[in-house]
Length: 130
Image (tube, rainbow, N blue to C red; front, top):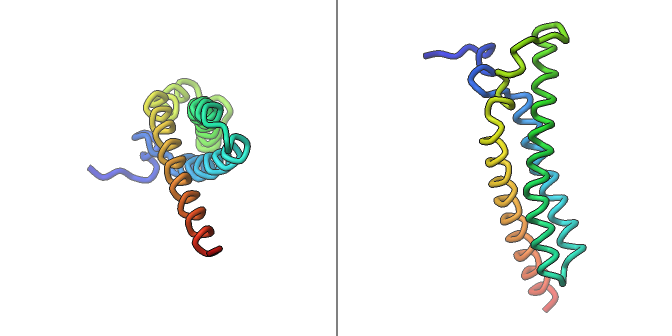
């Protein structure tokens, strides 16, 4: 079965929204991780609590942003602010739970990669100082 580009959003793939928000999400998680690491460098319990809280809040914010941008694009595609029942069929509305869970998983993957990179940099700078 061949999907035309106009039918992809109906299947849950809205490239302009998905790529923009995924890129912004990766940047935001990396930025927030660095800020939390600097703030709680010697305090493991507040560091962990803050990361856990942000791992729920940030995907929630991006889920809302995805719904918002998908709605905007749908209004542009339809050419009217009144999109009727189409809003309830938009991918970011239909798949909220899956997108949220994927966002939390992606958050922890990015944190793990940033943690590994920070550890690598720490070892590299320590070895370079010798």
